[in-house]
View 1 (tube, rainbow, N blue to C red):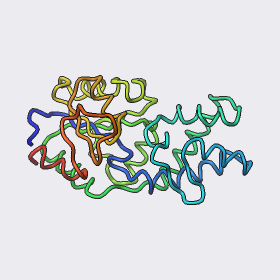
View 2: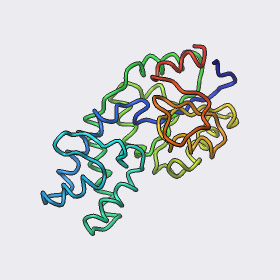
View 3: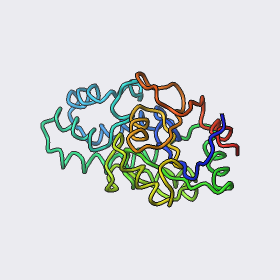
View 4: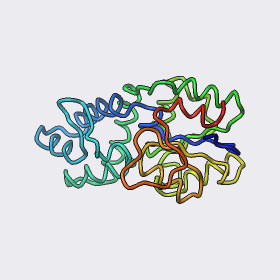
Length: 229
């Protein structure tokens, strides 16, 4: 399959460009250590959001994988009977530091991003992480210059699966939605693309219950073949 008439490629970050387990697993262990002093409380919170503190890994259904930081903060606040606003502010601060320190790329991403820019594609990021945290991670990985736009859940366009990030990306790219391609790995990404009315490529195994995707690829580097670059 060759995808034609694509002007803008918008990527999800975690699980698509960044290795979720190697990045967010250790980062969330350190985040919870700083956020929750009490041992029992920390382990209860970790269980609620699918973090294995001993192994430094995430469960397959961990909300950390796809939910926004604000949604994760609400879960933590509920477990601790704390203010959601205060928890969200502190969580954001800690995540920006610890994920920024731990971020690990998936194979082939740098080559793909370079090829996209060489062939004139507009490249954007739409992530349920914060915009600041995402930009910091891209900079550390040496990828920031490849991106024309970085949109996080806190950028004013809502969080996925709402379509706002993709609609804003199309506007910034100066093209219609039918010329935008979303690339992601979760049902949240597919839902955002479907709501926005753009095409979507899923990286890895197709999420359960999802059928309406444009294409599936095994690894991110395979996108080059789909786009003919």
